[in-house]
Image (cartoon, rainbow, N blue to C red; front, side, top):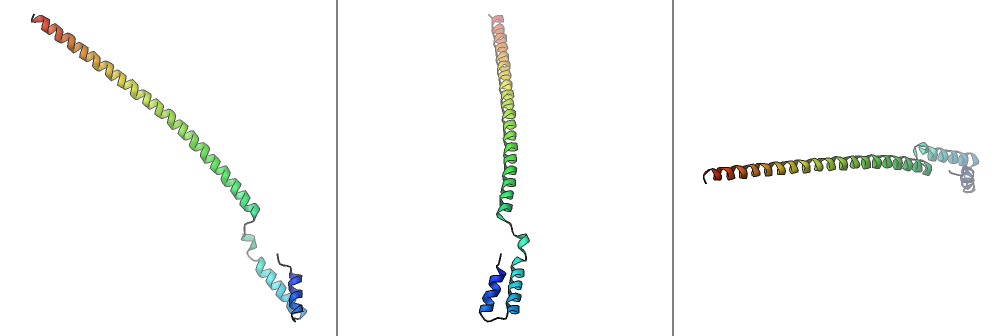
Amino acid sequence: MIDTLKFARSFQEAGFEARQAEALAVALAEASSQGREDLATKADLRQLENKLETKIDAVEARMGAGFSQLRLEMKASIADVKADMVRWLIGSQAVLLMALVALSNFTKAFN
């Protein structure tokens, strides 16, 4: 804020008439106050910072929950793949064993 009284007195001391000094002080005060409603105060900035922190915390919480869900899904998929591999391994071993038994029976038929 501008001290308009002090401003006007300094102009009067410099030789301006009282009316001129007052008019200059008023004009300066009006010019400096225009657009002040658009300026952010420290309180405005703190409030904005608090809102941003709240939103960031919410995003971090959602991301954490999403990553936790993704980990669970990946563990389930890995378990499914392991189970499939075990089934294929047992199945291939069973087929191999049957082939050996058949080959053994086949060779016995010629002995």
